[in-house]
Structure formats: C-alpha cells, structure tokens
Image 1: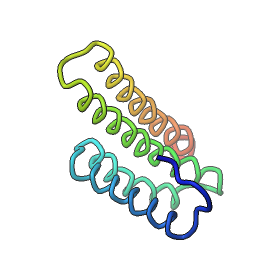
Image 2: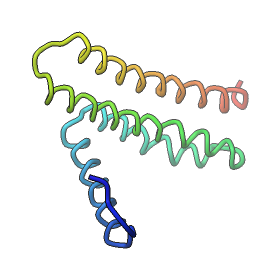
Image 3: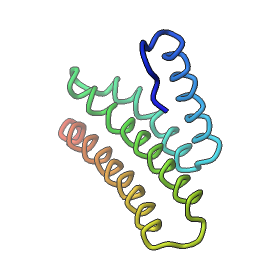
Length: 123
C-alpha cells in the first residue's frame, strides 16, 4: 500500500531496512546472487582502479552492479511465480526464463564493457 503524505526520515529509514532485508534474503536463498555479488566485490574496486577517467570507471563499475539488480528482480519474479503457481505453467516458465535472460544479457555487458575498455591497453 502506498504511503500517504510526507515521506520523512522514518519512511526513508523503513525503506532502507526493507532493502537490506531483501539483500539478506537474496544472499541467504539465491546461490546465483551470492556468486554475482562475489564477482562484483572483485570487479567494482578493480574497475575503480583500472578505469582511466570518470566515464571508464563508471562503465566498469556500473555493469556488475546492473547484474546484481537484475538478479534481484529475477529472484523476485521467480519467488512470486512459485508462490502463485507452484505447478508447471508455460507462462510461468516463460517469465522465469526471461528474467534469467535479462541477467545473462547484463553479464554479456560486463564482459563486453571490460573487454572494450581494457583490451586496447593490453594488446
């Protein structure tokens, strides 16, 4: 239910707490999220170090963070689909597959952005 009226510090604090609760749930229940989070823990500092200028640093850091965001959304889709329709349903399967495809596309973005930015320096 949407909040009404002024969104003060209490609502901001609650939103932060719910976000942390979501991150904890993803870490606890989603192996893919854990793997991608560990990858981001390596790539984000490395991207800040290897990037030459603000734009390169942003691109190298943004790509792995987008993967985490997509994984969170994919996990949310899968949880809702499993709750609503525990038995097999073609549309439910399609929704899960499309969520997974979104994560894959962003993983390709990580590889492409890192390769296009860093490969010319090393080759």
